Image: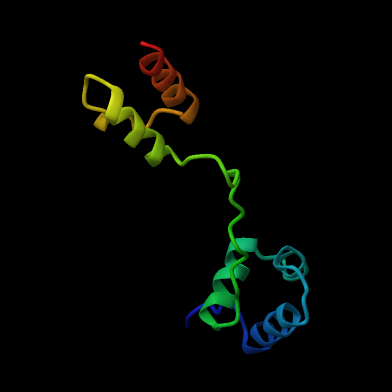
Length: 100
């Protein structure tokens, strides 16, 4: 016999709790399951809504891609390998070539 991870009653309860605004962390603690397990079950039930991702980029700050495009215009070498560099490092290179 297959071991049932969530009974129909548990499923109904976590869906009800989630729709009532109870945090996934609190639901998981109540039923002694991991947050990941509860979130996955809510996704499978079609009720989970992911929280919007918070971006830390400042509105007027250029993206790394924009910085690399600027660097490509002034650097005497290919910039393809710099995608893993930090924005600070790219800015340092830009200021070096802009001053030169």
